[in-house]
Image 1: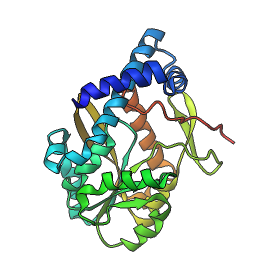
Image 2 (image 1 turned 180 degrees about the vertical axis):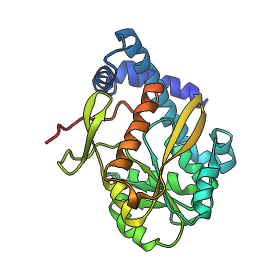
Image 3 (image 1 turned 135 degrees about the vertical axis):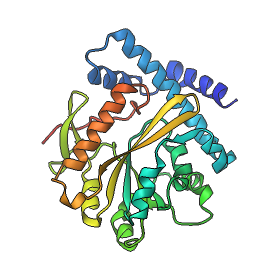
Image 4 (image 1 turned 30 degrees about the vertical axis):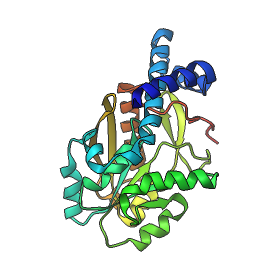
Length: 270
């Protein structure tokens, strides 16, 4: 029933509402100039199917337990994180909006002995913000597991001395200021938030790229890739550049899995 509802949702969203069709098509055409129109349309349609699956699967979270999520999300190399935990190393889990990050968050605390957190941004609508927060923290039994983005620096200072793993979705579009990190990404000059790298250096957090691949409908595979264990000795821009290249390779290999409806390229380099 979950995916029957998703299929109906997809028909409505894609054919009737035409939700952000122009944004999605433009993003795909600009990102894959080498692909023919027929292939762009195929990726576009599959993206909307995946997008509606994400919505349906997210709505199902309240009816699922940790054991249920573990049947759908497989972590290939949890030992990488656990080795860092045993060394007493805190870590940023640097991910992007692909596959089903909401389901990954529901099992993240099972992957290593770190104390696990995720960063979130408050929604403007207080009612929906409260509902989404409750959805994401139902497994936590009242423990602090979510960190509001504006309080991240202060929270990291308060948690110093405890091995933490903080999930951060690092592909949002920043304000396009000169202080943002600019680099070529999918054939376009693209800006990135520098906060993850700056905070990793300040609080000595290792950075691990977190890749979540859709293997089949409702089945996901997560693989961790170490970007930097000792950020204080890495050159400025190194962590972000490595993260961007990982994201780019993922999208090129899994073009329908990224969140193409996001208005990612809103700014030009100052």
